[in-house]
Structure formats: structure tokens, C-alpha cells
Image (cartoon, rainbow, N blue to C red; front, side, top):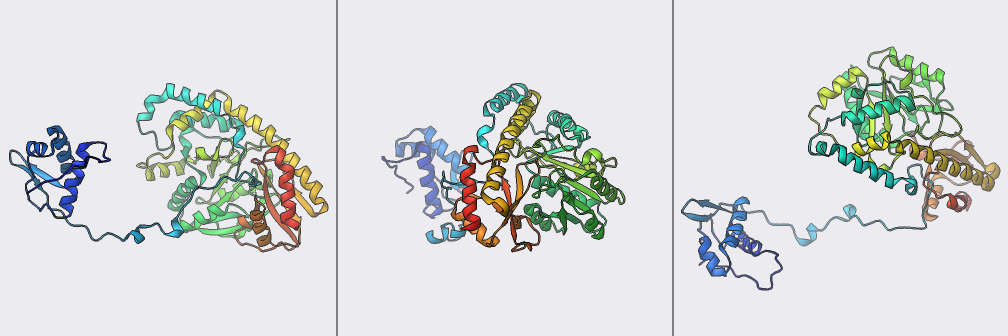
Length: 477
């Protein structure tokens, strides 16, 4: 006889859920056999003293999930179900220790001289949310549709005008691709370049430079050619001696040394790219908004008359890292390949964020924010350099380039990079040594100095003396 009992103290929000689950359990336990007929809705309703509608809801859920089926005017029957294999034991179901995550503990004593961190407190959230409301009012109908894979055309129009004024980038909105970060754009770019290259993709990269991008390039099976960096940026002579067909570089503020590439070397690089059809330059203009005491340095792309430069920009430094808005400008021939290859790819960005950015730029808030950030960051930079010189005296050499949100400094010390990196953790100071950015790492500089990459964006102005004192202990104690 078919029967189930309802628990008067049941925690279920709806009776039909309890009935559905109890019938399902009996089927899986083989207490109700394949092909067995279930009671009619009215019979079961009377048996359980519930409404027919409640039984109807339970049966319909069982039908949808494939546990039972129905024949018109014949009733409800149990489906043939393949029995699952034995489940793992409770111990096996526990997440392995190496995959276990915990919520990070807030540490108010931690200070940051990291090049990656920003001062969130100065972001104009009020103006951003106001721009978001304007975007909602103007473009809410667009939020229900899939936008162009390259990003909304209206937003690309605004970006094209902005980078023309601020960076001299000469492009049409159709050439812009907006995505969720520089790494993703690099991945797409390398995929395209592999299609146009008649040989293996060999990339000349700055050494030191972006370690994360080195790893990405290797994952895509590109050959990496580490090229040394001098006071003028990447070495053109080493590039010419290599078999590289692509160059990845940061000419306006070399990362992490800070070198600004002069015009002669820029033209030399463009001439190298022009000589062969499969030669291209990827220009990462990651923090061009921040210049102190000088005007902005024009982009390399602004000098390119032969469509050989792939320009990449980002809002990670000028807005917030968490917004994940970056973009690139492709030469026309690469744009055709991109559109053919990625025509079915859905856009990655939050469309509302893109329309908000559009309003934020058009109403002038973005440029006001950049102006304010430059004033604040320049004051932090000056104070930090002042205290570093005061504390370390002749034992420090600062590469003082008035641009970006970091600089490099060489410290004379008996300690190794391992010592400094471990001591930084112990003294709760977030800072990176130069070897973090090298393709071929070195344990110690030959001249007896250790090089640190020092960021100043996130450190509160009043905490700078405290941070420098911690750095002194890291270097000497």
C-alpha cells in the first residue's frame, strides 16, 4: 500500500515540498517500484488531509524532474530511473585543505607601499552613483539586450574622443574593444597575432616587467624574449638581435623602472615594426593619467602612421581596480580578424558600468577626479621621497621619475631579497622587490644594492613616516 506521513513539526515552507521530497526518497530507495501507479491526486489529498492543489504541485514537480510520468485518464506512474553509484563518504565530501578558503581578517596595522593598491577614500562615489542614475534613465532599454561584443558603440565613441585629446591616440570608435582587464585583452591580441604570423609568435618583453603577462604568454605557447631596460626604456638593439616579431612595452612610464622613452627610440621601434608585415607593437599605457610637473607624454600609437601599434588602456588606476574596465585599439587589418574570430563571443563587461563610465566622462567628473588625484598623489610622492632620503641618507638611490603611482629605489644593505621579503611580512608592510618582475631572477644586485618598487597611492598621507620607519627596520634590523 502506498502511503507517506506528514511531519506536523516540519520545517518546510510549503506542504507540497514535503510531499514531493518524501515521494522522491521512496522512489530512490526503491520502496516504490518502476512502473508502479501512484494514488490519484484526490485519493492522496484525502489520505494526507491536504488540498488537491497541494498534491498537484508535488506531482508536477516530480514530473518535471523525471521521477514520475502520467498517461491521460490512466494516472501517475514511477519512471525507470538509473540508480546512482554509491556516494562518497562524509570524509571524502570535505573540501581538501589545499582548496579551503577563509575570509581574510581585517588588519588595521597593515600599511601598503604596493604599486597595485589605490586610495579608495578619494574616489567620488557620490558622483559615480549620480552618473549611474543618469545612465539608467537614458539607457535602461539597452540593459535588456546583448550589446556589441566590442562594447556599446556610444561608449566607444566617447572613449575615442577622450584618448584623442589626452593621449593623442588616432582611432575610430570601431577600432576599440572594451573588456574586463588587460590580461584578457592581451590573450585576445595574441590569439589574433598568431593567426597573422607566418611563424611562431615570438614576443620581446621588458625585463623587468609584467610577470603575470609573461606567464600568460607562455600559456599561449608564445616564445618569450626578455629584453633589458635602460634609462630610455626597452633596448632596441637587443630587439633587432632577437627573432621577435612582436614587442610588448610600456613606453610612457616603463613598468616598473619608470623610464620614459624618448622620441628617437620611439621612431626606431616604429621603423622596426614597419619593415615586416607580421611585426607589431603592443603598447600598454597603464597609468598615463598621472604626470607631475610635466604634461602628458603622447602615446606611441599617436606617432604610428602605418597601423602597427596595438594600444591598450585601462581605468584600473584612474577609477577602481574592482570595476575591471580596460580597452584596446586595433589596427584595421587586425580588427577584421578579431571580428571574424570573436563574432559569437558575448561581451564580458557589466553594461551598466560602461554606460555609467560614459556619463562620468561626459559630465566632466572623470577629469575632475583625475585632477584631484594628481594633486593628492603628488603630495604623497613628495613626502615619501623626502622621508626616505631623511631616513636612509646616502644608503638610498631613488629613481625619481615624476610620473605614475610608483618609483624604484635602490638600498644599500647586507640583506638578501629573501631576507627583505620575509621581514616585510613580519613588519606588516606590503611592498615588492624588483625580482618579482624579472624574467630571469637575481638574488642580489652586483653593486650591493637591493631594488624595491615603491607605490605611494594607497598609503595615507599621515602614515608615511610610520611606513618609512617600518621599511628601515626591514632593510637594516
